[in-house]
Length: 578
Ligand code: LR7
Ligand code: MN
Image 1 (tube, rainbow, N blue to C red):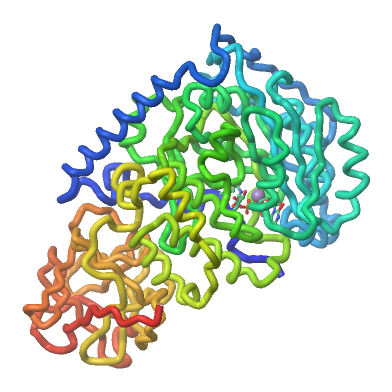
Image 2 (image 1 turned 30 degrees about the vertical axis):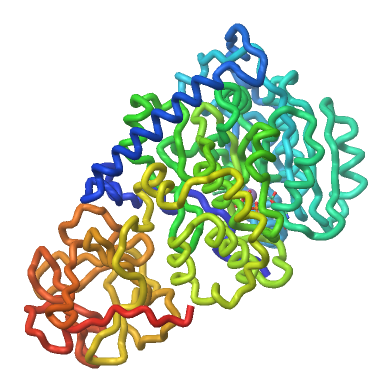
C-alpha cells in the first residue's frame, strides 16, 4: 500500500514558472512597501553575517581543501562515473518484481558497486574555491525504514569516500523499526569494519522519520549535524562548502543541490542550480525556478549561496547547538511529511537563513511512490503533520490549507501548544513577514478580499477547477461546500486564484482558462462588483463571466457581454463546513 504521489518527485514544477519578472507579489500596489521590507531584511542579515563571521569555530588561513580530482573508473562494474545501467531483456521480469520492494530499480542498484565513481558535476567556479583551513566536524545522520542494502551502503560509502576525513566525526544510522534481515546483525557487523565510526541506533517501534532523526541527533558528537536520506550519493566536494557557510554564520541552514539518481537506471543526473524550494496551498513542497531578483542579489554569481524559501527536507546541515536552539523538530509529527516546511518557516521566521549551496552536490533517488506503510493511513498522517505546520506557523494563511484539503478539518492536529510557545519564546516573525520578505513569489496571496466558493446566483452550481491542470478550461460543478476544487481566492490584485493557477481569459466570448498566475494583471484581472449585483467583469475585454446553460458549452463558464442577468451573478460567501 504505497503512498502514490507523496514521495518527493523531482522537477515537476521547475519550468512552469512563467517568467522571472512575473513575481507574484511584485510589481504591485504593495511593491513599494515590499522593497522597503526587503531592503531592511537584507541589511539586517548582512550585519548579522558580519558580526558572526569569525565566531564559534576556529579561524585562520584559507585553503583549497582538495584538488579537483580526475575520477578513476573503479570497479569495472556497470554504473561507474554515475552512468545508468540497462537491464537485459531476460531480466526484465525479475527487475519488475524487485522494483516493488523499494519503488526503485533494486536490480540495477545491486549491480552497481557500493563505491561507484561519479563525474565531478560542479561548476568550474566551484572547483577552485578556497575554504577556511579549520572547519567544524560533522556527524552524518541517516534514518531509514526497510531501506535496500545497496542504496543504504552506497550512501555510507559515498560519505566516507568524498568527505575530508578530519571533518567527518561519525556516521549515525538510525533504523526505524525495519523488518528486513539485512538491516539487523549483518548491518552492524558490516559497519564495524568501516574506516570511520558508524553508530547504529534503533527505534523501539516505528516512529517515523522525524522522531528517528531526533534520536539520531541526540547521539551526535560532531559540531554540525548533517542529515541525509538513506538512498543518496554524495558527490566530490559536497561537504566543505556546507561547513564553511555555517562557519560564516552559525544560523545558516544549508542544503546541497539535490541531483537526481534515476529510479529506473540509477544514472546520476545533475540538477539545475536555477531551482529553489516553494510550496502550494496543499502544503506540498515543490521546486520552482529561481526568480531574477535572487540572481541579482547574488550579483549573478551562480556559485554563490542561494536563499531558498523552503527546503526539500532530507539533505541539510545545521550547527548542532543551533538545531536545538531553534526547536529541533516537532515531535508530534508522524512517519513522513510536513517537517520540511515546518523547519523552513521556522528558520526564516525565527531569525535564521536557509540556503542552497550550489557548489555542494548530493544525489538522491527520487521515486514516484512511497514504498513503505503509513500506519494509521497515509492521508491521515500527512494531513495531521501539515495541519500542525499551518496551525503553528502560518497565521491566517492556514485557511488556504484547510480550504484546499476538504478532509483536514476532521483530522486531529494534536497538542501544538509547545510549538506555539517556542514561536513566542524565539520571538519569531509573522507569516506575513515571511511572504513579504522571503517569498514574494509565493502562490499564497498577501492581501485578498475573499477565500471560498464562487456560487452562481442562477443555479446550484459553483466554479470548479474539476482538478484540471494549467492551461485547461475552468469548469463548474454542483456546489458541494467542501472546498478543494471549488475554492478560489479573490485578491486585492484582482486575481481569482486556485492554488498556483489564476482565471485567465484571452478573447471576446471566449472560455476561461486556468493559467499559472503571473501577477501582472492583464488577462488575469477581474472586478467583482456588488453594485452590479455580483458580476465578475474581465478587465481586458470588459465582458462578464457567465454560467453555461444546462448541457451547453461542455458545462464550462464563458465570457459574454454584461447584461445584468442572473446568469452573470455570482455569490462569494464563506459558509463552508471547514
Ligand atoms: O517511517 C519512516 N521512517 C524512516 O526512517 C519513513 C521514512 N523513513 C526514512 C526513509 O527510509 C528515508 O531514508 O526517512 C527518509 C526519507 O523518506 P523518503 O525517502 O521516503 O522521503 P522522500 O525522499 O520522498 O521525501 C522528502 O520529504 C520528506 C518529508 O517528510 C523528508 O523530508 C525526506 O527527507 C525528503 N527527501 C528529500 O528531501 C530528498 C529530496 C526529495 C525532494 C524534493
Ligand atoms: Mn528519499
